[in-house]
Length: 273
Ligand SMILES: [Zn+2]
Image (cartoon, rainbow, N blue to C red):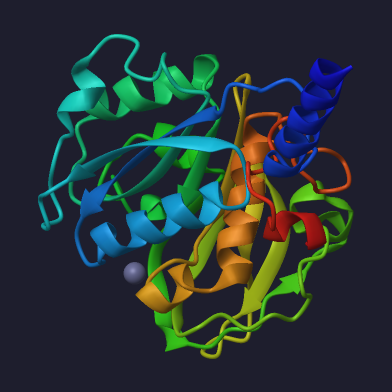
């Protein structure tokens, strides 16, 4: 009887520790963050994204931070065949606008087209911008080559966004910290805008959060993420975290992590959402 009581007690403690998200431990989602290059504080952004998302969801991170800070760079990792194989999802926050070699770019897009889901953040939309081929842009779901000035931009949900799990409980009209609005020249055919912001210069609305399908793979993107303040904003981190889960097929229709993918903590923010 005493042993039974101890087992019950242990179960209660475990349940509490894992947020009752599931009795069986689930292998954490394996996420690879590829970052570095021009114009942003990638060390800070990486720390905020990895710690912030892991406090919300059962995600284990590998970070590939390229130390170069210019606009050109080819990342060695992509030379490895099956470079993405160990990961469930890859997050691109790299920024090498003048790297344009088609063969190099296709090493990246080939993996995604086959079966590797992705999340693309801010300068990922301007990386490989000089390339003549469209493969990277088709993978992103948008074509962008320039941005408006920094401001606190209101973000408005689209009809599709209102229904999408990633944007459940997103505060419609949320204002970004000072950030750049990317001008979207083209939305590719498989992309769906979830939210937009309006340019203070030309009065046009541009997608700022969207989903895309690239081959067999889900892609979630946001053009925000310029400054450190954006990565300190809980709305931004939560939305990107949901995007990561959704891309990997681990976000339920109600916008909550699938069973076993809630963060292993007692006071997870995602619970109250
Ligand atoms: Zn920027």
